[in-house]
Amino acid sequence: MSTFKAPKGTYDLIPPDSAKYLAVREAIAAPLRNSGYGYIETPGFESVELFARGVGESTDIVTKEMYAFETKGGDKLALRPEGTASVLRAALEANLHKAGNLPVKLWYSGSYYRYERPQKGRYRHFSQVGAEAIGAEDPALDAELIILADRAYRSLGLRDFRILLNSLGDKECRPVYRAALQDFLRGLELDEDTLRRAEINPLRVLDDKRDDVQKQLVGAPLLRDYLCDACKAYHEEVRELITAAGVSFEDDPKLVRGLDYYTRTTFEFVHDGLGSQSAVGGGGRYDGLSEMIGGPALPSVGWALGVDRTVLALEAEGVELQLPASTSVFAVPLGEEARRVLFGVVTELRKVGVAADFSFGGKGLKGAMKSANRSGARYAIVAGERDLSEGVVQLKDMESGEQVAVRVNEIVAELEARVG
Image (cartoon, rainbow, N blue to C red; front, side, top):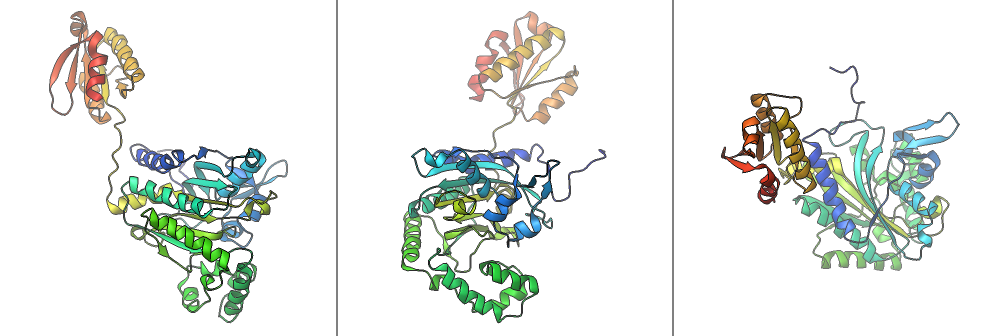
């Protein structure tokens, strides 16, 4: 046993399970790459102030969950708790918005960190794939992102997820609603922290998961009743475009999400097979975030989908992903000459795209064939001195047990044809 273990609330991705995570990441990214989104990668840590301004000082993420630290040089940094603020910061720093082709469409994949109470589906280190469309205010862009996420989940075989949709209004109509909600909340029996939150950002109270708070919120004013005509029209067009694309959704007037930067369209993907941690992803429009972090006005929209939660959702539905074999051919050399020849064969197989492995460590036939079985390879190549003297190797089908002799100079072509 090692002296060290993974920190509390984290996990290691280890084969063969790690192949599921790679497949999920690829499935989520595939429709994005096919829709004009370019890949971006940002540092694992950023200025604390970036998240305080962008995510919101009243959010649990900033007040309770952020891993913040001070460097030897006195810089105050934080491990990134989410991706949007970092991606927008990078786009602004690189002046991507000045290239003349808006929106700037970006996708990313990485690890994020929040100090939370660990439980199934909620970790202190977690993985997400995200997408951001920066610099355009267009209902079609909001609809595009929702449709792409739906397509990604369905390509994995997920069926039992729901899309919740709402509008949070804009700077014109939200202040009126905000005042009405605050008046309502001041009349409730709430603890000091919640009352303080209600004064800073009352919409965050709607997102409170505690039963005693939710019971008191019955009858709270709903933002949909305060939307201005422009926001109503915008939201209706998003709904129409999604519907026309054949994507089902549910209107949820209480949907807020946990970040301060959202405006207008907000949405969440939930899976009822995951218990209390039912959200597998979500996002929305954040038209004022660029200005919050010191940039120009750049209306934008995006989402992030949890890789960990998606894997759990697949397991809840009993979906088995069709994963490519990590090894198709396993070479078993018997003797030094066979080691040299078969190592060359394995190298050539890999060149032509056949997944091949080799019995390392000088094992005998019995031990090497056990390794071949464990590898999951469909075929094994076995060769000894007698085989090589005849210019052949033995090709064994690990499923049927059938074994045939194939000439050394033909084995690569033979396996390429068989494996396809």
